[in-house]
Length: 174
Image 1: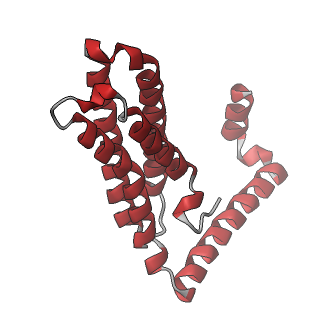
Image 2: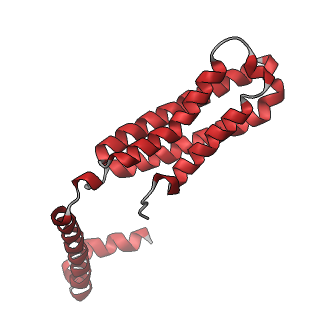
């Protein structure tokens, strides 16, 4: 699926939900203690969705990847602080909410990792690099690869004696 706006990305929506829930969580008196835990937790959680959005808007796959790695780092930072808060006895009444947020943050991190893995194996450099000529070349390359695959299947079916090893492998996989 192709997304035109970062607001439509499921991972951005998940990250935004995390930030909203962290802001609600940190309104609790437990986070009013001296120190920067509340502010840092808020900044890190909001940084997840912000970096996804900024990377998406940059227009190149390389920049998107860089911002997704930053977003994933912010998800790790958020999760780490949630682990810390969970271990403090004064926050016992928040354990359930903190645990749920840790799970949601870990899920978001996995989504980002999946996206980065797929982008690393993509030969599109990004919207910034796509013009009519490069888009046509990319589409022609994909059509040629699909045609070649289809042609190979036709030849294999027409002349199975020329491909005995591959037929045996298919049967053993079934």
